[in-house]
Length: 488
Image 1 (cartoon, helix red, strand yellow):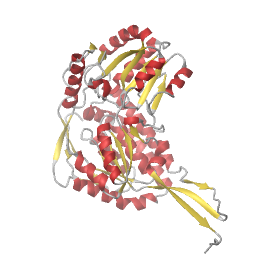
Image 2 (cartoon, rainbow, N blue to C red):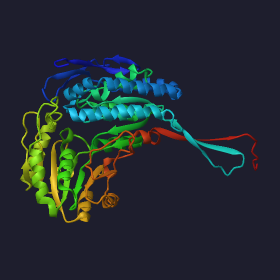
Image 3 (tube, rainbow, N blue to C red):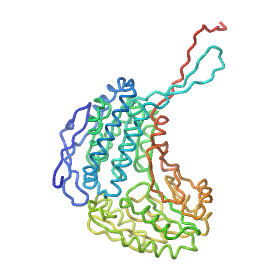
């Protein structure tokens, strides 16, 4: 695969198609800088064609027997499982994803497809008691129609997969707009897998676009009345703007947005385990996941020893080629991301923060970086920063740690390390986060779990067990065998 330049086109109504405007852009390998693929640079016309194809396919797909949906999902799972080595290489070349995180993504997606096979047989409604004698009442769950799915690059296989698989499994059709940084592993690969598994034409359509040109496609997906749900994973800034636009069209949105996730290390924590958990939680996938620990809040009684051990571990993490199984810190996704990391670290230091390790880019990589004493007005202190940068701060007891953890506009995920699990569960009730892991770090997900945040981290929940709530609508149906008597 090395050196191969792929040609990626839209997937519309079961066919691979060039963009209506004929333009393409070069997607580059974040490690080598070489061209990875030439990608169709789609626009509003392509988005409209995708919506039309999805709308045409919806009536038949909504009535497809459950056994057919089940078999498609199982065949797709088998195909992805067989292609593990190939997909790992694609993830490394397209997004700089290392072997470890690529394996996590593959495991998740294979399991997700297998779980989605069961959604076809999930209960589709319930019988309701009626006070009207002779009336039988039902609450029936119906697919909503066309779902617009907008997915990011950072965990491209997982986040595109969960955006399309659950809606399709419960009877919807989908238009997927992947990130310009992951048009293959976050886009066309899913169309290829599902089409080969037998998914009918038009059920999944993929439209790619050049950097800076997402708006034209998103505008169509939001405004077109045939699109009935919008699924978005990405930044809070973009998610808020999208939700505002969708609200004008009375469209329901499912949003998983940014995080500024805390990891609390309490006084009774096993220090060695806490350092292990913090190192993983802060630096997995080069710190480029929404779940990564951005702030580690350590009880003051153990802060000095924790800091010494943690900084030593961080500084020793291997940096380099993401295709090397030993690499922990690979390249960040692009030059803009690299310069943003450098600028924000320099800003924090200029404002009085202390840099304990890292902070200076090396080629396309940013080394593991740990700071302490970051002022509340520095961007690192209040905004999500995608990369291997983590902040340390002390706390005077568990209550102070919780207070500090909640002092953010975000509320995606959190972790608590403590020697008393039941105390950790009690503290979890007071943490303002959609997800809390006791005696674990914040980076966790499983296909069946209710993944999502509170506050500025989003609305709604992803997960196979919650797909029916987000991607179907309830229809109240009554039936009578006997005639009813009316008062006039």
